[in-house]
Length: 135
Image (cartoon, rainbow, N blue to C red):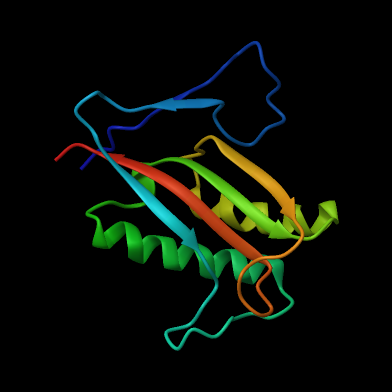
């Protein structure tokens, strides 16, 4: 089933950003606000300790499960925010590349931010998202 999310390109803005600059959904869309997806296993332990890219991948898997429970998939995501516990740009890029690769051509508007600390022991990455579906 095709997504109702429409990604918007802004041709007068830099194409260096690896995402659409805006996105819309129709007025009758049901919005899904996801809690921050964390790199936790089924017992609540942080996975991939010390590895930004693998933690970002684990966050994607958590997000996919939450989306599926709400009747949606990655193609229905309308925006993301990637939180990375680091002040090093290389760490942010490692997390971002994992997220970008998971979304493929559905390059939703995103914000990438370095933060001082996240909520779980050894947690380096958290991924927030909003999705939209038409039932």
